[in-house]
Length: 108
Image 1 (cartoon, helix red, strand yellow):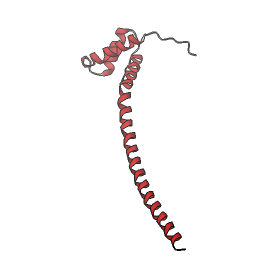
Image 2: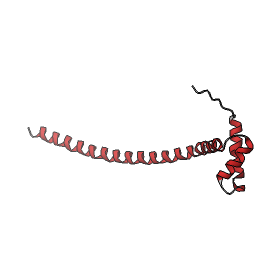
Image 3: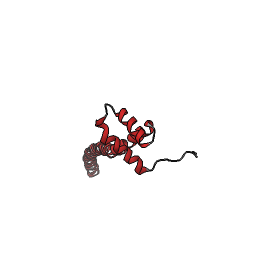
Image 4: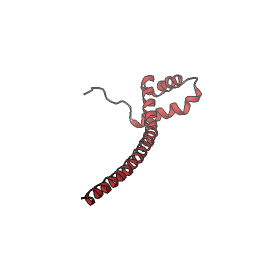
């Protein structure tokens, strides 16, 4: 177990990330915004950068999930189409062999 403890609450983190997003246009780069705001809120620039990245990944998660769901849905549709075609072929083969069996018994 780690001896470090969280010094900042989740609300504080969210507020700091919002500040970076809102004031990003006031600075020449994102790093400059992170450096300035981190100094104002009392955390390191790297810590604030990690919070921003975590927030961005949480926002992108549902979009990525939706994309993978769409791909999975398309793959399942292809599989259903292929299985229906295979079932049609098997029904025809079954009917053919059933008819051949009936013809064979009738000739004896």
